[in-house]
Length: 363
Image: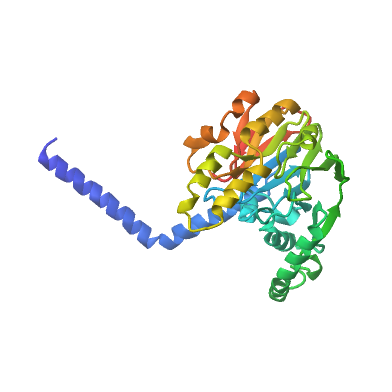
């Protein structure tokens, strides 16, 4: 290629780039408007999409209490037919519920496993969004073990001023004052180690709350969902216990709390570099009331679970290359598939089938 040809080619490229830049400058408002319009349209389309009948589990938050840039606090959305439920309300999870395409205004109830702050931080936001998102005229039910009354009362009081502002701004027809906040629906369990109680039985869906061991945090529960031949269990925070293994018998999916103690030990051993004087003690304490991936795998194997999914990931996994380190020897104890849960993951269980499929809704 001669020098003249190179010069001509360079001039053409520069001209094309200049025209493109000029077009962007001239039509920047139109381009921006088109981009925003498409983004909003896609969001509304995803929220109005038709769902096949079945049981769905959406992971809106998969972190533990330690700060994790890639994960919101523990929160699981469960859809069964026309029913929509949320289990736990970890920090930052409310926005993920919406971004995943679920309609907060159609939530039937919010279920809490226990009352640690990392499981209830977004409860007020969820109650508010459920109210305004559906112009609901009744507060959302907040189902949980005894003590849920105190939690709901506190959030209702904290959001009471905001409720008034919204009614004044949007009008009672849009945000009926009677629908603000939540209504506590407490349940109690017997003193038996494997105690359980059915908390929802509606339209073919049965939800069973069962005792788990998160001592000294008590009460603490997990939940089992059964719908049209499909089943899933959400462990909540726990150490291995008989009640969880009993409720997980033969389920399609077990969503289990997971803490890798070897990685926590690294944090513990380096805690002296932290400005927090309490970090060493906390890192020494927390393994006593969570489950390792290896023990979660043992439970899944003994219960005959079809799919094990780990959540409440502690400590954070900064890079996927460390996934194997987090899993440790879990694969030795459970021969079925193990998935490290991520925010945005949707697990689908079609009605009266044995199929299990995964789809990411946030990437």
